[in-house]
Length: 284
Image 1 (tube, rainbow, N blue to C red):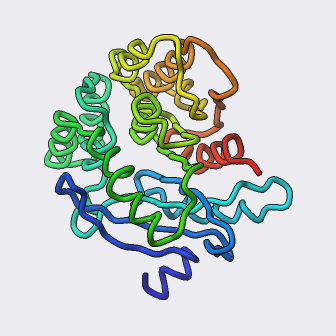
Image 2: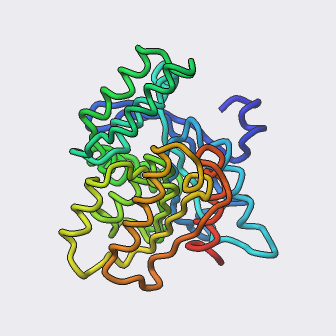
Image 3: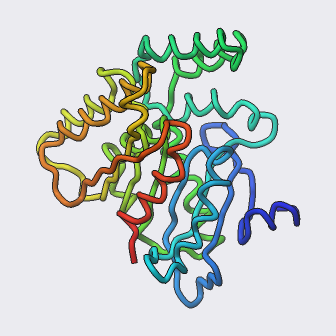
């Protein structure tokens, strides 16, 4: 990274990588203070939506030095989009973070239309945004993280062989639930912030039913925001209601599944949710 960016995000490298599925990604790797893999290897925490989240989450790696509530050492790998695609990350994430076959809720379409009416989104942007949802491939993106990207991180940064984590917010939180239900053996802990379960017929409910009475051993931490529940936007009301329903439908609430309510809006809840995940699942 340039000297300027190094000053904003200390101990952070950036590279671009093409997936075996033919998509390009931008990757930010933030190592712990004084990280020396020869002395002690640290596991990886993958953070989704890197174009948006890296600036708010990567600096929290200093929690590993907090004398009042330290967090286990980890290497943060933030994954987003590169080049011209970085400008369209909000629509491309719909392709990568949403489980295949996920139904599109009417409330979601209504929210996109409201964005056009208020001028925050053009018709062209809205059409592209919804088009990516019609062929969502969360399965391919999950394979990219575990099969393509992780071996490179392990090789280049000398990371630990186990203890890895995953954190996603909104549709990234939906992806986190999908990963927990399908490939959780790779991760030791997963954080799902305000998971985007906007439709009551979401694939995560079908996967949960298919799982039966046996839940993954991987720790799962789910957060959502009080302003989502108490606000007057149907898309966020549904998201919070369905996240709570997901938790209630778990056959058992053992210590491996935790949850927390943040005092934030959907937009402002990202950092608080990530910090809640670190404190709950990765405390020293």
